[in-house]
Picture 1 (spheres, each protein chain N blue to C red):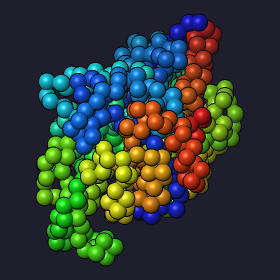
Picture 2 (picture 1 turned 90 degrees about the horizontal axis):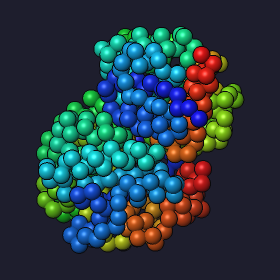
Picture 3 (picture 1 turned 90 degrees about the vertical axis):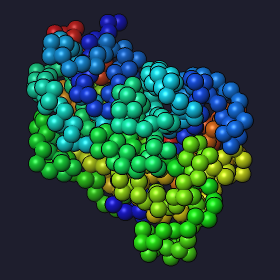
Length: 280
Length: 208
């Protein structure tokens, strides 16, 4: 495998639906929540608009609500005919199995995988790397690089130190884990994709953390989804052309009808990015 | 219109339910099943799947569905493999050396060649090389691929996508067909292919 591919992939646009107790919410930095509708209905709408995938993030995921999540996946599989990922509160292979059996195409793991990275390998071994997504929430804190865990190329590119730290529990809990090292680790364990969220940018509408995105793309060989901070269609273009992301994730600009997915695709295509047309 | 019985072979791995629900949407009485009687009664048979060649083949054999799949392919009923379900039709795969496939189609599945990202995880355009009723309306369509291995480029490759060169997108002839992409995850074009398949199953049931 190689990180530098000669055949460019077609970019993907992925609306993200934050879900709490079966309803879509989107918080500014995950605190100030506003209701934006039925997740299945919204996902089907995005399918119709030409979205390439949909991600559901169960942001509360308390254990007594697990059934709500399975039910959501179950209903989505009947109405949505593009790939969809479910994340939030997945701690074991059995959790993943239930969601995949209910109709999810991929599961993303976050807090549980930071606590025990082997979870990524267990899911990849059981169901395949293609459905094992490592979701990484990052803040800039200046966590130094531990020794001997990164290629010399990556050290040189990035000056030997990284300001990026992994956070868990929806971006609230610092871990002391360096995000670049962690991204390498989870891909070695079999993650088939990385969902990379800048918690500094999430909800700000200031655009992706392009430096973070580029740093992760350069050290991994699996698709990277850039997430956190999209406020304009130009931000989506930057994520691909400057960040090097394979896919871009956004929420508010779609949920609040500021832009349709079709408009986003036209805008990206006009910028020279290969992408599936919305009306295909 | 009648809803033909389509058996979606359930060997217990990953997301097989999406294939069932999309076939239902396109007019089939689709059942996710490992029941030999039900499979024998079905007008059409679908072998779906996600995951790795070896574990999927092992699961297929554990449930006895390897024999069911071979029998369905041999008796002339419309048969559709999807993704790893395509790869399982071959004699083997580089993904799991030594594991025997179903051997319904000749040859070995090989790693995607060239300097490309693996898996190919993207929407890509389909180029139909051999028109057929199953591929009606699919030429030039965008469909969703996620795979690291691919079928050999032989005469039975009916449609390709471009990923560092031509890659088998649809294989088959006669009653046995398979797609490397996921029609159940390919929005309108994917549903169109499944509708074409359900039409064939309906016609086969009427003629039987």
